[in-house]
Image (cartoon, rainbow, N blue to C red; front, side):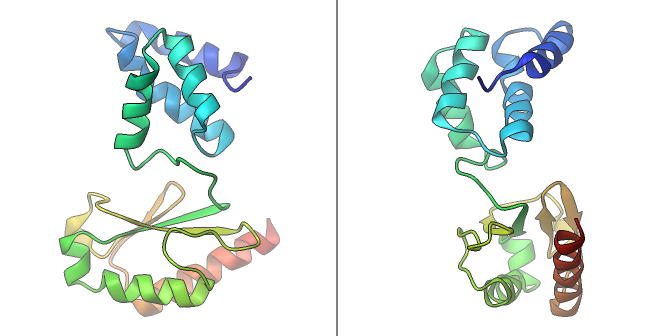
Length: 161
């Protein structure tokens, strides 16, 4: 069972703040992803049943928002913005650096499961481009040097942690 007592209780606490069951879908999906690391087909079915929503509605939401992982991701989910502001400031070069550093292509996960590399359309930080999100943390105003220093730090954290 994906939606456990903790998730159910958390959603029940949020219910008074949301006008409809459908409005609770995003928080529910966040809770599921926090627990599971991604949103599986089984999780979509459980969410639909839990909120008494059509299965297609839940599938629409999960497929629309890029913040929901539709497949398992590495311990460090590295998302680099490739939208116009980031692109004009070198995001394409940074993506190439990450692919070389990690030995994978965009959309892949390292064999050891430590990193998943994803290009995303927008991280809403155009004023501090180029930007990258690692799990929940933003890293802005990146250049090759700062990117490689960040990756060194992430490698160390994974080894120590």
